[in-house]
Length: 302
Image (cartoon, rainbow, N blue to C red):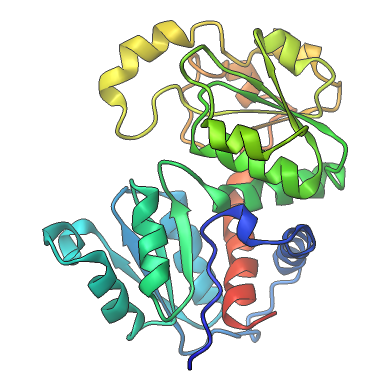
């Protein structure tokens, strides 16, 4: 009987200790780049993209390369996934030829089904429900700049989307308070809220949520695939911009994060995203280091 592989579909696939270990390991790998350290020499990562991405592709591909391995980029045009082959068949075939699979896809069920039938670790590179890899990078960034986030206050502004869901999970694992300010009708999924018992609070105004916060985070108003809702969302979110007034309500050493790409003048003002409290470029770079730590953790049992 073969041992079931360890997957990373959700942050809740980690314990709190493992999450903190990955953060510290990512920081170490970032600050101690050793070209001779190649733990994934000869190993192959298959990267399956239903949704295109700049940061996800570059960070995983570069990370595998740094570790002596290689990565295959597969778009919907390159696989049978979009042409009617059952997911479980694709999972069994692809996992028989590679050492790890990363999926960036629309439906969360695609990733969970893949994991059930894969003989190698499966990583969620983003679904419409969760974005756990981004949270590894976000939390690494906070720890680098401000130390442990335990008992701190984080404010999420905007859509109760996949990022918001993963922030809820991070709050549970790392024990911080998450304030959520989102318009009616755009709240995070109730099952995530119910599971978070005591770690989250909802606010009617962004200003109220931001008060005394240590970290302010937002995302675009209309995510990939929601472009047809752009006008409707602009109206719903018009009072949900992170600007200088919002940042001034937070603690004076509060950080600002955004997973990018950003729309300056919509969800965040240019003076905030380009200002001294913004750590968006560290956050983006840390996708590389956090995912290297994750790949090492899943493939080297470290």
